[in-house]
Length: 181
View 1: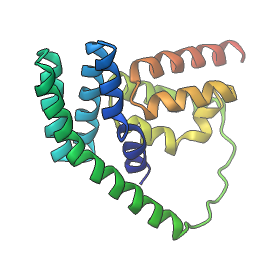
View 2: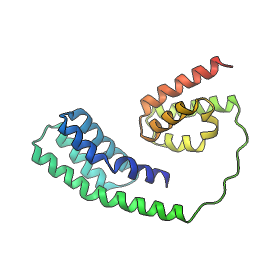
View 3: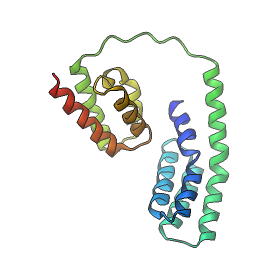
């Protein structure tokens, strides 16, 4: 559910971001946004969005004329908009049904934090989308490596698939943690 919610929240506005980037003539950013949408749509099995985003990415990369880019953008919008809305509705319905109470976890040790960080570093290095799930499942032990602001920024990077920057922040946090022992 979390991955679907993130898709709807983070990729839902992607087309507006692409349009803004193109308006500023930042073709590299527009192409990267379309590429990210293409990949993330593939990760959740949204094949129609993936296909349309792939076409949009290609026409931006090829510097096609404005009409072709707009047609490709509209094709993405035709499949992305309804999907994002359906995901938001489904997530809201599931969340309104409530969830079972969570048992508190035992306190984490520095060794557990280092082990989890090593596993996460491998996922980030491989640009594995499972890194976001790993962070969720190991939040208690990983969070010990960061201060509150650092954790929030790190978590946003992982959730947004900014794996290279997240890996650098994780390496830095592990290094600081090792020095403070």
